[in-house]
Length: 308
Ligand code: CP
Image (cartoon, rainbow, N blue to C red; front, side, top):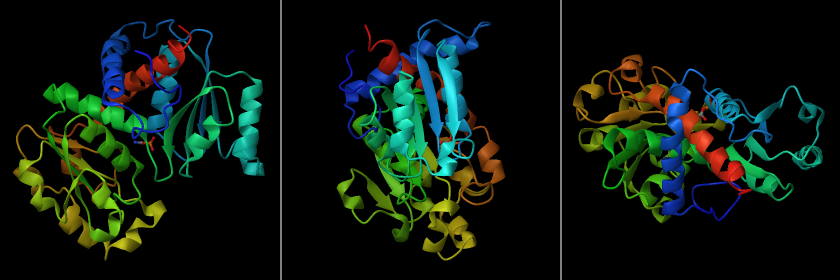
């Protein structure tokens, strides 16, 4: 399949067919990670840069693993160990990487729109690994892949996304992805953590977890983002946990087939109790594992077959 764009900047601009293509490609690449020799030559001779200017554990490691499993050469640049610390701009970093003729740049940045900006400065494919409050497209593809693996479909599923919708790039990307694939999404949050134009998004709204708990197929908790001031937008952590937290009592009420998901990192004891994070309907580790196959699929589609 020919993708419209050589970059992956957001889910909003993808078609349903393009999302399906990424998910199907991830399925076909998944088994490579179960082999003794976890490597194929698909991206041999290609260079992929991980430009992570905001902290990350899962996204950074899985992009790196995915690139190595496709035999690409990889480089990592972090904020604290690069000339960003001396004030170098994203534009000048792009010029430096352009001089090396790299094939793809995976960027995480605290500013919304930074991945789009980078894509205008450089010939390489740009993959958005999370830009401010805008989008985290590979996380949404991972989540769709993980849900589809369990239910065999996305169409018709009821998905509740609970927490800081206002600041969450994961929520935005998931809303675009899941609704394009036919799922019905309900966002669950205090009014202060909803975007003011929420009615423009194709979602239902609930103001407490108990409204959706018993009939959701997927219960998707978002992290309380202390670094984006979300704590000041509700009365207290205790109050948040009481109305929106998935605790030991609430997990008894969810459907026996329902999935509990969270993009990580989790705040145990705030949006999710320790028991809820670890119980047998929690798919948090599966999401992490899916990250490798999905990110392999994205790099394969944007870098590997773009030449062919
Ligand atoms: N889900 C996610 O983006 O996690 P990291 O911040 O650890 O990459």
